[in-house]
Length: 276
Image 1: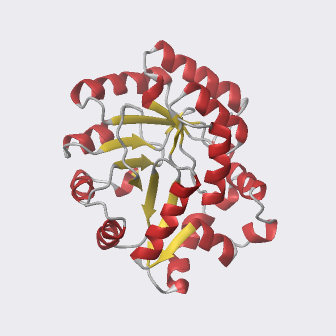
Image 2: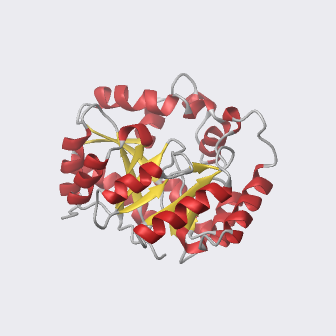
């Protein structure tokens, strides 16, 4: 990897990020900001976050292959690389079939997209692939710097590492609520998990593969499933849950902090993780 991510970063939807918040996340010692929600291929928002900060890495988590031609995102990558060398990690992925009416041959589509990035001279070690199942994880190891799994658990991280092998980036996302009241934490976390993810078969298939049941997935998710997918408790408990991914083989863990006021939680979690 030529992009320094650190061990812990922050995952945000594009509509939740801002240059001001990015600067604060950098001050708190996090190593990377991941921008999700299928950011546009011109990467203008990513560039604005890099402009507002001095050293933190910014990654896309992820650019959707169906909506963004490889040539467009490659041109944006090269533009930003000139301005902010070594700070952009390009995450790309196939998305989910429920969102695309023409979703077909996903594996072949990913291979063709990576071929196009090769042709546009986007370095292999500056891109990662959204991957959950063994086949896509193996492709991530073969054709990119590594994998960015979403909506996973440390158990998945352990299995993913076994597929990827050593020396390949593994950067899972994990949702967190810094709140010691379990019911209140679940009330924040469950809607984010349930809609849309428990209605999307790439995620539900992965959960079933990990040993969860249809009953766990039904009706917005069982408490047991929500607790597994959304770490909650005080900052120390949340930090310990994120560290389980590292123990299971993750190189970098990006926390998606849920709740109406993220800054206090970001600060408390930074302290618990001893980032500064």
